Image (tube, rainbow, N blue to C red; front, side, top):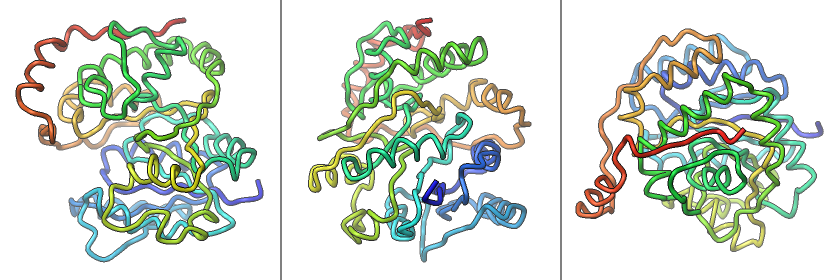
Length: 312
C-alpha cells in the first residue's frame, strides 16, 4: 500500500476497547492505532495508558479539556493530517471486525479517491446499513425500515438492536463463509444528502490537510457535518463498501438494555477473548422525542415483536 493505514478511536471505554484491541493489533494492514483520550472515567484513562505502554502500535492523542462528550471529538480530527496516511475512525464499541479490514477498506478507497470523501463498511447496528441489509436481502425483518439515521426502530430501539445482533451472531457462528458470500452481493453505495452514523469511516489525511478547519469545524455535530454537510459542499459523497461488514454494539439509546443481555459476551467468545470488564451505563433519555410519541412507539412495538432472521 502506498499510504500508511492509521486507525483512530475516540476513547474510551475499556469494556469495549478490551475486545476491539484484539482485532486491531492482529491486523497487520493497520500500521498504527491512535487513541483519542476522551475519557470520563479515571480507570478508563489508566487503561489507555496501559495499552500505550504495552503495544508499540498504540499512541494516545490528547487535547486540553476533553470531557468525554461528542463535541470534544471534533478537536481531534486536526491530528489526522498526514498526507501519506489513510485514517480509519472507529467507534470504541466495534465488536467484530473482519480480517484485513485496513487493507480492504484502503483498496476500495484508493480506487475511488477524488470522487468520494469517506468510506464505511456495512455496519451491523447502524440504521441506514440495516436498511441496506433488508433491501438487499441479507436479513428479514418483520417491519419495513426507513433509510434514516434516526430511525425509531433501527437507531432508538435496544430491542431491535438485540434482535439484529442475535440474528447476525447466529449467522456468523453458524456459517460465516455463507454470510460473507451473501454480503458480497451487496454493491458499493453512495451516501448523499443524508446523515449517516459514522461508526467506522476511512478518509485520506491529504483531504484533512487540504480542507483544514473546514474538514471538521469546532462546535458542530461532527457526524452531521462529515456525513451530510461537507459532502454536499464539496460534491464528494460518502461511500458504503457493500462486501465488507463490521459489528457495532450500541448507540446511547440502546446501551443500557443491551448490556443486560449476553450479546457482548457472545462477541467476546467469537474473538476467543475473556471478558474482563462490564460497561456501567445509565438508561438513556431520547432527546427531542415527545413523551407521547415515545409511549406510542413502545406500545406499537413491544420488545418481543421484533423478528430478525438471516436470509440464507
